[in-house]
Length: 220
Image 1: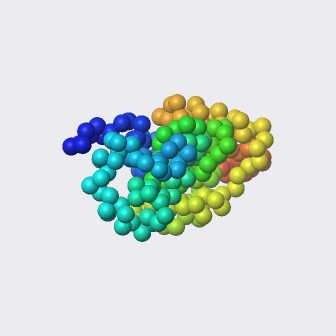
Image 2: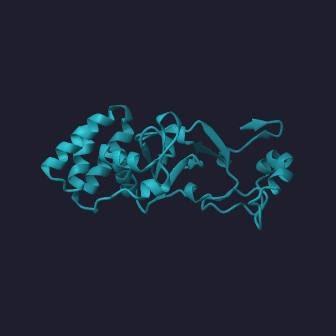
Image 3: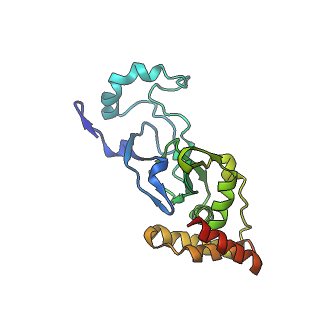
């Protein structure tokens, strides 16, 4: 970022992720956000010189924000989703549930058109992304989600939080491995392979798997 006050240090700029920037196993941030916090998400006690000069003309407006209480005027709010831990992120408003994973250390900051879960390790973030992109959970989520205009649904925390999650058995690592590969090649996702993995994770019988295949094709 640059302007009349000069150039902002790239260390103070982070990619900002909107819901529209999230696709299955893919994120494409198109915005940048001035980051006035430290690595752990705490606001700086004093702003670096470049940020201070850049934000000075907006200081009074920032002080008047409703949430600006007992914090520096440059503080951002509800920043837990920006934590640099492994995360799974999905679109709030979408025609179908779409999720991706953010690896530990990713600087990306999901904005309020995304929902985020935090994880202790990359494997859990990847496995959950795989589950949320499966035909079975997409169908269940669509049934539960609130309707919006144009055939869209709102996949909020209540809806996604109500979805069944299998126990961490032998297929958990397989789900994570699939998601890791899918993130590397998001345009070459084998949906049938993913749906088979999810069926195995839930220990579905043959008849249930057949029904899952039918549902999967209806969703495409």
